[in-house]
Image (cartoon, rainbow, N blue to C red):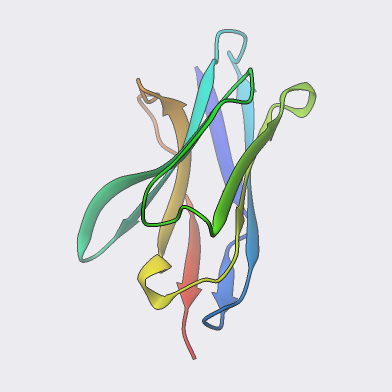
Length: 115
């Protein structure tokens, strides 16, 4: 079983920046691609970005040009660097494997973009 712990969220003004971290532990040997997801009361869970062990990345159109996903394989950690944040980015952000998520999701980290 893989354990996933998200951190780095908080309250930020529009146009601000945050960096989220995802620490993986447990049965992580077979992890290939990690993804960042987000969920808000008004929307279902949405895939935001993915990064493979070979550093191939995907970004959703809604965040392309503003967010960057990366990973440190040695530290078993994935990151989501978020810039030019908008109120539409407000959500709980989760990390998980992609395309087949682990059965148990972490608690996520809250990102609130507001004046």
